[in-house]
Amino acid sequence: MTTSTPGARTPAVLVLEDGRTFRGRAYGAVGETFGEAVFSTGMTGYQETLTDPSYHRQVVVMTAPHIGNTGVNDEDPESRRIWVSGYVVRDPARTPSNWRSRRSLDEELTAQGVVGISGIDTRALTRHLRERGAMRVGIFSGDAVADEATLLAKVQAAPQMKGADLSGEVATDETYVVPATGTKRFTVAAIDLGIKGMTPHRMAERGIEVHVLPATATLEDIYAVSPDGVFFSNGPGDPATADHPVSLMRGVLERGTPLFGICFGNQILGRALGFGTYKLKYGHRGINQPVQDRSTGKVEVTAHNHGFAVDAPLDAPSDTPYGRAEVSHVCLNDDVVEGLRLLDRPAFSVQYHPEAAAGPHDAAYLFDRFVTLMEGQRA
Image 1: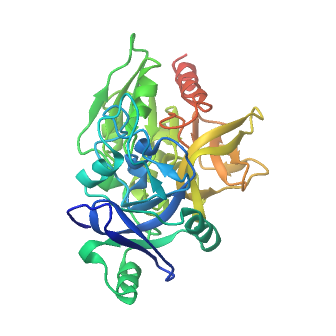
Image 2: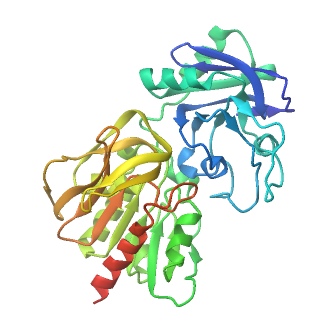
Image 3: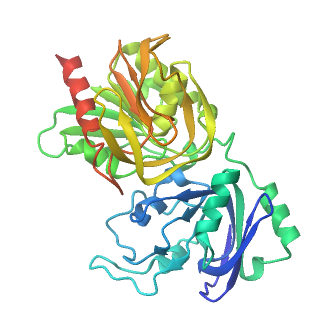
């Protein structure tokens, strides 16, 4: 990625790998950037989306037409930086208005070197991605703009998301601890594959001391903290490349320690149990995805960011090396597996983000379910 002096009137062009182009104006930094074009259906929570590490190497198209009206604050980031490779909006706010706002979204994108584009028909672009599928894309502005054939060649030379091993690029390098709020009840070892800051906070609210470990952690590292439970986080990339986390999770399953995984962690559990994974046509992204908890029949509105899914049977439990497993949650839009549960060991996972940052609180009970597993194991 290259950047130069920003300019809201600077012409910009978005080029998809199938050759379709959209022309607009630079938004954020000026230069060029590449990634996988995906769309997010959230109308709010753009700051949490931008700083979610699982969006690493993705160019996010916002389907909501008006973005940036609440500006940027210093309380809502989910990690230390913006992770999206590029940002696409239709009508950016001219002036942010919120009592917590410290600067505009345009200023923040520029300061962090994120190349974006505004003033394009994001509805047409979203319809194109729904029909053709997520694909590689480039955004070019300023001196980076050249003839379309040259730009298209650059896009087609960029790496694909399928086969990408990215969790190590976003995870912490060193273990850190998030202390329990109030009385400490449990200790959890959390494997950082791209964890969001609100996730350990939600556990801390329930009396859990969270030790966040690097993606390269070993089984010995996990059990050195004497955990009551083990957590595998969300993260970017293709789960088919995540051989180390899969091996790590199998070690936890063999010991029978209560286990909870979300998003990428759900795909890791699927692989650990012997299921395959596959790439979705255009994925699920946003904070309004309907999911049914099959154990209760309750429908939850949930926050998603995943382009891959677990290939597991929906109709009956499956035999695995760790006992019977079943699909616990399913997406009501397309029947994609949204959760797994072991019936003979204390382990479960969901494909979405229950920490509600940003997004609905319908899935907060999953952290309580994790606490219940740890209570049962201790008893």
